[in-house]
Amino acid sequence: MVARDDGTVQVSDDLEAVRQALFAELDRDRAPDVHRRLMLASAASMATPSTYRGHPTTYVICEHDQATPPAAQEAMAAKATTSSG
Image (cartoon, rainbow, N blue to C red):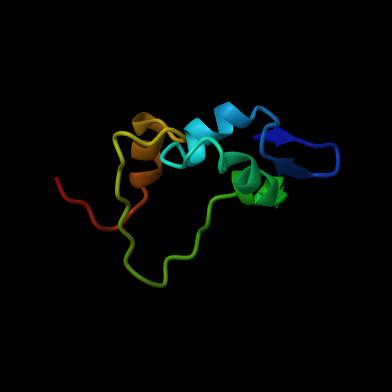
């Protein structure tokens, strides 16, 4: 992700890095089309955790996730109300 001056973040221009992180299973020839469709997002939505706890929450840790390392997922999972393992 690349922060912009207008308070949004966008996906990197490095197509191969984005493909590996977000859609590695996709054929390389289809990757440019998917990359073009990725939208801008508010930087606040990437940094501000949700505090709504009106229902039980569970977090599934994906050991082979290319975008979020397991240690970061474990930190996010610490706030879940349900655990297994």
